[in-house]
Image 1 (cartoon, protein in one colour):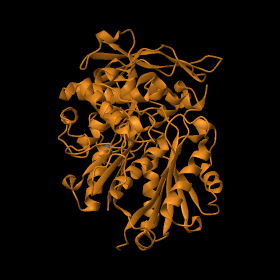
Image 2 (tube, chains in turn yellow, orange; image 1 turned 45 degrees about the vertical axis):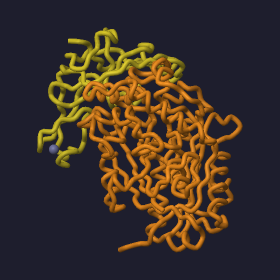
Image 3 (spheres, protein in one colour; image 1 turned 120 degrees about the vertical axis):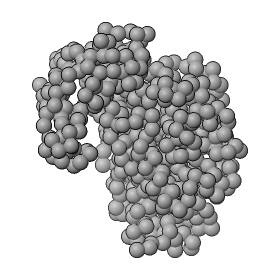
Length: 134
Length: 385
Ligand SMILES: [Zn+2]
């Protein structure tokens, strides 16, 4: 498994971000330095995965058409959303099991664990978070 | 410490478009030669070269283009530096050149920008452009670059009732402005319906909301006040050069309907120039997508947040109206060879202030605004005569 995927496994598998021990600011993805107060006293914070849709788009012309390097497992069109997690931070994610007509700003969603992409000819599979309507 | 002023004394650019018979180096050399010729300087007077370029490695498999272009332009052994800030590479290059002269280190340098984009397929260029956003948390999950701006546009429409038609009017205006610009990539008149009916890219963004994928290069000669007064009858003074940074990912920003970096750079530019929006006669704004022009009008303070669409609909951004925006055609119609765009904006400002622009606005003072990525870098320059 390439190191760049292995390194990101915690954040992709369990929505693990960070919390500043000084001022309690929350981050996703994890931030080694608190952008608010500058503290480096940081601990891991796993987010529950419940949230709501802040905005979204239906990507009609995606990366998946002729890319040799990385194939997203869904073909265009697919839905990308920015979700505001219950705890506060926002995350960009694909929506799963959902049609464009069902999407709306403010919709309640929850994180699920899905296949995200396959890399290269040998079909290395990368898993991670997507969101579904709650 | 109070250094002298800094001026643009020469400008040159290639045509923007799908230029199959010109490679990256040829484009950059053409722009450099035209800029030097326009300045009236001897090439031996040029002391340093700055080149804005986003991704020559991914688009053409050539890195180390700083020295390659200096040497090919007959400018070696002067120092040459490539500057990268995604779509703002050009304006950051201009700013580095400005700082180099302002510091007193040099009297004459070139700020250039170049991008050769059409040697790869359009899907590949979509992938390459997405490297301006977070690879780990945006692009790798399928968020294309138009997709990111689409999410901004949808939010803006939701919060302020901005309409898709109002966004389309940005494209219609910029296409109309480009009709007179022989350097423009898209010289074709379009109507609101054409935009509305064009192929969907990422809802609500449609094909004609997007700047095209273009090849091109642009260069300006920057000089100290002393040299500018000696060498040039119509120096264009750089009255402000401001730059700001923000999170690369949209989802890490507090407000999705404004680009904070634009607002910060704008305020700093007005501070440097000791001026305000009332002193600006014309704007060249970063309109990679139509929504981006609306955001810029708002973030720079030319209209209240949320009212940008209305301003465009009322025709107040047309040439001859209250505040002309993108008389060159903008990135939208002039074309958007990424690294060259920020320099091409400065060239339009130069032509406007010299009075030889293709759509003359009789301006005394012009503001240019160049954005990198979905707003992680913003650069604002103010030019006067
Ligand atoms: Zn903190």
